[in-house]
Length: 290
Image (cartoon, rainbow, N blue to C red; front, side, top):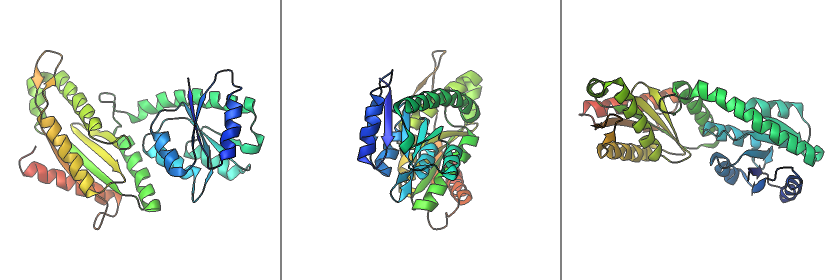
C-alpha cells in the first residue's frame, strides 16, 4: 500500500487528512510527524510515496525542512500545506522544491487526491531527469556537480542552525596499477565496489559522491573532525580486508588514502573545509598511503 507522510504540528489536521485519504480510489497508509525533527528524519528515510508538509512548524518552517531534506538527497515528492493563500509563500515553496501547494481551508478529498497523483507522476519524470544530471553513471553516487550543490545546502544549514559538518575525501592508492593489471573494465568494477563500501560505512543521512576519477567524497551531516576521523578509519580498514571479485574470475586488492576535516576554528568556509580535507589527504599519501 502506498505511504503518505504528513508533517504538521496540528493534531486536528492529521485527523482531517486521514478522513480525506480514506475516500481515495487507491488507499494510502498515513503516517504523521508532529514536529520538525521527527518530520525531517522520516522524510529522509525514503519510505514514503508522497509527503504533505505544513509551512508553519513552530520556530522553523516547512521551507527550511524541505531544503534540509533535499540537501540529504530526499526525492520524495512534497506538497506544501499553507494556512492562507500567499503568493510569496506559494512561489517560495515551488522554488525550494515542492511540487504543489494547497491551502488547508480549501482542501477537499478530490483536490487532495488529484494533487497527490499529479505530484507523484511529476516527481517520477523529474527524478529521471535529475539522475541523468546529478548521478555518476558508473557508481550511482552523486557526481561532482551534485557534491557542490549538496555542500552548499549543508553549509547554509550550518550557518542557520549551528549544525556541524564534516568532509571525508577518499583516493584510491596507485589506481593506475589497477587499470594496468585488470584493464579499464576491471578498474570500473573496483570503483563500483568502493562506492558500495563507502555507502556501508556512513549513516543514512550522510552522502557519498564520486568527486572525479578515482577520488570520492563523503559529506557528513551534524558531524565534526572526530566523526570524520572515525569514518575514514572504517573505510581504510574495510577496504584493507576486502578481496574484490571481478567478472573475469580474478580478485583485486586495493588500498585507499583518506583525509578528513570538520567545520571549526580555521575552517570557516566551504573552500576552507575542502582545502583542509584535501591537505589531510595529501598528508596521508605523503606518509605512505593506506
